[in-house]
Length: 346
Ligand code: FNR
Image (tube, rainbow, N blue to C red):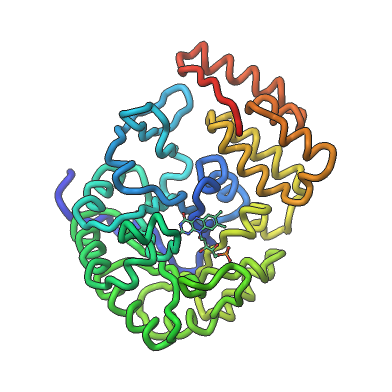
């Protein structure tokens, strides 16, 4: 049945209570990172933000070679969004949009392949704001509400949004309350204003006030500066008064932050990440970007310099003794009919 607005049975609907979540991150939150976060203990994983018109320019293709579902750009054949059954019940697709109709079309396109849909209402980048997306929606509440209503009424999957706080705590609570009234399943709140940068203190008490006022789950975000081990996640939970938290940078640096048993050495994490990148034929330059964000100051070491020179996924893998694994899998994929992609990393 594909009836409009038919809601999934409660047992199948994603719950946002008491969850630890991989936050949406452009370029970082692609399939290998999401699967690794789940393996390490994250309950829910957000995709990177995808712009509505880019998804609308793509078509859905089942990829039997990799066991994935791909949304492929019809103009240039690039993969806009790749997902798979392993994450089906946990993955939240975040979109950037300024338009209820386009947002609903995207929702219809992906709703059977994801656990939920999220609207980005926090991105302060010029590209987003100029297009009326991201944090621009905090200033255009009417539009924000129209978008959420259209999705809540038209989709089977849960709908959420992710916002930033406003300079005033009462105004923050008021806008979050208005958004919650649309029937969304949860709301993510980053405790910084649109003009505040990551080095500013996160306003955990603002998030707390929102959590106290709303009767839907509030997901606390913005705590990474104070999160360097698993226990710090609980501390952030308590300080923000939320049962669910969403982690971005601490996971970008070492995604094993989700492990109850503690962080793994970075090399172990990178190896696991590379194996997943190979297994899901992840774009080489995307893999390089993510590993670079894990290495950070280690890029200055001799091995880091070797890494920076690597131009293909195989060359990156070779540095972590996975070169022949990468080569063999890529040959298998090619033999099975997956189009070979010659990719040079920046
Ligand atoms: C982000 N952030 C972000 N937010 C969002 O809603 N959609 C997105 O696509 C992105 N992309 C993104 C990329 C990168 C590399 C970073 C570091 C951040 C913001 C992110 O989700 C989060 O709100 C902030 O980073 C604050 O949380 P942490 O880092 O303190 O846990």
